[in-house]
Image 1 (tube, rainbow, N blue to C red):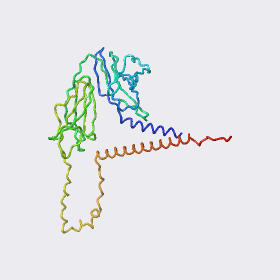
Image 2 (image 1 turned 90 degrees about the horizontal axis):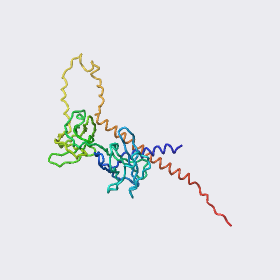
Image 3 (image 1 turned 180 degrees about the vertical axis):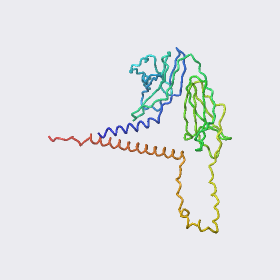
Image 4 (image 1 turned 45 degrees about the vertical axis):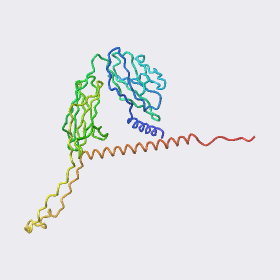
Length: 334
């Protein structure tokens, strides 16, 4: 009975680790006409085993495994009874095994994902996917613009920037940001710099990026949109001025006590004058409260993972010792 919760905890730990890894599929979209060939790349450097699986996901259907490829000899195994399995083949490239279709058809339009296993993991790691469009429509680069937007984050020492991509085909894009200090070079945003949310509607895609205002330097932010037609940079940059930390205001001057108090308003006659005013509760900023919650959740998850791993290891050792048991070998004298 103890083995079941231990296995569940081990699975939870493996799932949390697997979420942090992802195979690299550089091609966000691919557009082909009927009869043309196409191949889907997948970086398999993180795969410890020799097999790479490929999946197909159509708009109104669930994930379906197509085949798997042996990386050593590019041997293709078609054992999943996929209705289109004979249309697919494999090609070995320097950065991994690619899935290939010699002649595409309209019903090949779908998103294709690769996956593999890492040594000791109970779960597969997946790529981000590549969507295939089988159409006669031409690839059109997006029109990109960037502008500031007003939001509550301004009250927390942050600025919000909006990057909009429109009038493109295919409609899928990826957003990235860079910044430039005055009289400095262009640099990538630090990993902990703000947050970003993406959304799309009516053929347009947008990304809202919240960035921390620097206390010393003014930065200009540039938006980049990765598309099948190429990377497009917004023609304008958005400046985020430096915001020095607020200085403490001097205490207000205190009035000199009167030299004479009337008898009816003296301190002894007014009990409220001698009472201490109640202390006002200290209000924490929203950002500080959110930061505390995030750190507390991270700490709890860390403790849970460590305890789970220790429990799994201890239980595994106990099972090994129990199965081994005392030695039953003996010798017989003639």
